[in-house]
Length: 491
Image (tube, rainbow, N blue to C red; front, top):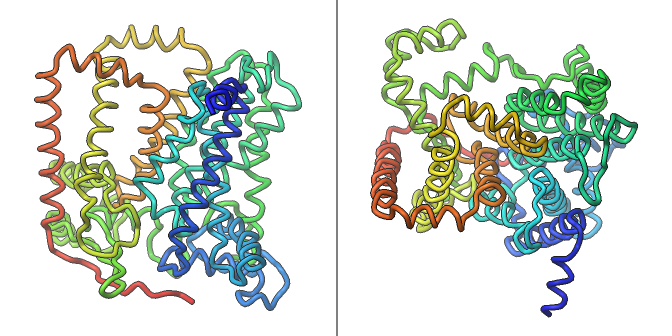
């Protein structure tokens, strides 16, 4: 047994990543098979229904992307789910388990790509840890066909492909000193993955600035070739063409942009989200005793909207609210941020109003944030800007790619602070946290630091936890319920 483990740990890095990907696939598939969820609700049921429309919903028609209707949801994720539904039909005589195969495959690829971004060289048993942490906290996102995991997984694939294309030498990977055909192909595929991430959840458009910084990280290569942005855009338009054809059929206009104003909305989806972010604290979906969606009202936000007579928010009115009510708006968004920083539900569809795991999740989430915050404060915030700049400029290309990749995961979740939140919107933020914990922060070094000043760190930990839970308790104690909507299965 020991010789087997030593042989596994002696594999090359890319072989370790591949092995970790296979293990991740098997763990997720086993988890889904044990839970055996075959009833989907609301968003997940809508995705499932859309994935079957490519052949008429009842498998009566031939395959065509023109069967896809005008909807807020991009075409890519339902299109990905479709062949796995067929596979499920072949194996289980129904298409309800297609999500098992798709999310397991995406999870395995995520472990490979996430480890590749950070060039993890640790023991092989530790390589699937980020995915296992994600499975522990957000297990419901694996059980149901929802867009959150798909979007962040495709973002990780894009970042990994760019990292490989810019690699300066690592066993099993490309060793480019100048731009070649292989790298051009990698950049094209990265563009495909980037568009898939945006199409599945449009909020991942906020990761684009970080991608641009990554591209400029290797200036020697980037300056020599204008093919890099062209290659990435080529990939974007290759996959975007599918959405464009669908839009041409449903709206009469060829555009790779996901529709944001179907159903006759008076405002864009983003503005609608801003309005709900002011009006509501957060939303929950309960399955029992009756399937119901609940939006918890924000009393201060409601008073502001009523005082200004706002029923349909515009950008001008939103800026006016920020200027006229800065303290109230800051309080609203602080509560939203705390909601994102403490995913305690596990599943987007809750069985009851309370759970015994709530304290366990809160303690786990806060402890992870405490470690990351204390590490960041000591190493980056408690130093001069000049030293930070010097340290960054002297960093290797790999470290720069890791740095920008972390922000690429962070920004989509931070943009969700402006909306009325569900904890699942923070999945990319928590992937960033898990990346820091597993690849950047040395836990042995951290605990040595804590032992040097145990009382100081203990006081800060306890006070921070008290404030953290106080804000959460105030929100959960607010029983002002806004929109109560039955969760109907669409099939």
